[in-house]
Image 1 (cartoon, rainbow, N blue to C red):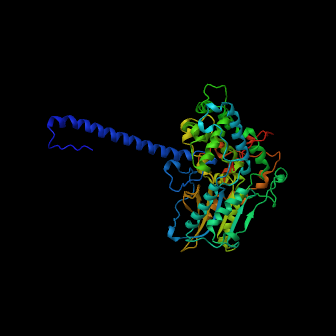
Image 2: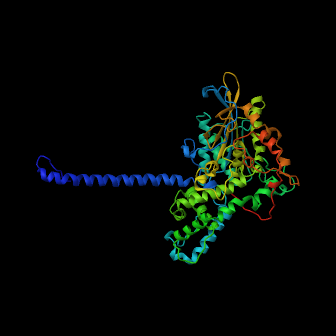
Image 3: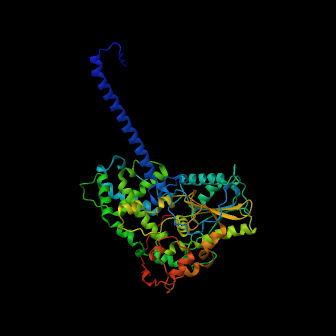
Length: 526
């Protein structure tokens, strides 16, 4: 290192060196700043990238999410003149959680699609990126749909955080008189329940898990019997939903239109180029692009890396496929059709019945924990007013897509959860409810507050708690059903279920009746 002493350097030399030194220092600082900015940008982009795979997004901490990631809700209509209790006045007396299972391995359909794409690429192996040459998938059909180790960790962590949030310094002692732990017949939901219980209970080995049975035979004959899982898999037991939505291609018209759009054509061209096949006679479809996106999503969720499949994607492509997935889920299990979310009223009714029994003193339950699927949690969230019900259209502008209030990456990632917390006030013994969405405190739709009186919510949702008839709504018959979301009638803001149904009763809905399709549509997202 050379040190210049101003005392011994003549003025002429000094005047010549100073500008040069300043240029070198300035250039170095600029380069360092550029590198730092690049690193920050890359880190930020990576974090954002991880949260853009719709229902295949790994669970992420939304409790302190920035304003761009806040959960959209329907506005309040309740009277806000009531006194809001101080947190110090509230005593938690019961909690109920409805959670989706954690990260799973791809379904059999996903795996077969990826393997088919790899076979199609085999003749071009020498042209492909190096990592794809002789590449085999890191999973096979032996683990299809099973809960992964990363998924177990998600549920263990959720159990630990729930324990701490409830004010417990150590795991609680399980007793079937005080706690209920239930899951569907699908193995990954049971494994999720076990993972959660291992953190929440000190004696997890004695937990009695309630498994609601599978009975698909009755779907088309009797939509509501005691021997089937109508509580957590209501979508399986609703015959009209199965016919008019799940297996009806017409219900997914917007999705198919977007798949045929120029956006997806450009995505296919990008994939061809990124594979090094720009000049080859090979054509990629929207399904091929989705297979690559799916493989990328599982690379991130299962192995936390982006250097294989994800390296084939652009940010623009990821954004557009995230929107395509949202269109699909919006019309399958979101606000696209009324029956999608109204059938979840059977679960809402059970949750409120459990709270009401606690209030009356008829129950000693401190907690109920349900483990199910995206088809369980997302309809229930939508029923309560979480997530925008505005139509998702294939011809939406970039601005409309970017500003949409329905994002399954926020609402329904792996391990998505709704927590209903029942509080009693110290001085007056009034009961208040708080609902956490993916552990985030947000105002309850229609109430406008984080803590709402139980009686107010009972009134707000009285149609679904007292009047709604799952059996009648799901029955296959010639009766004309209203199967449209409230936005079809121009309801610009949240209206109570009672008011909405009064309006719907005066509308001729025959124009919205569906044409049944015999084509089976696979939507195994759970």
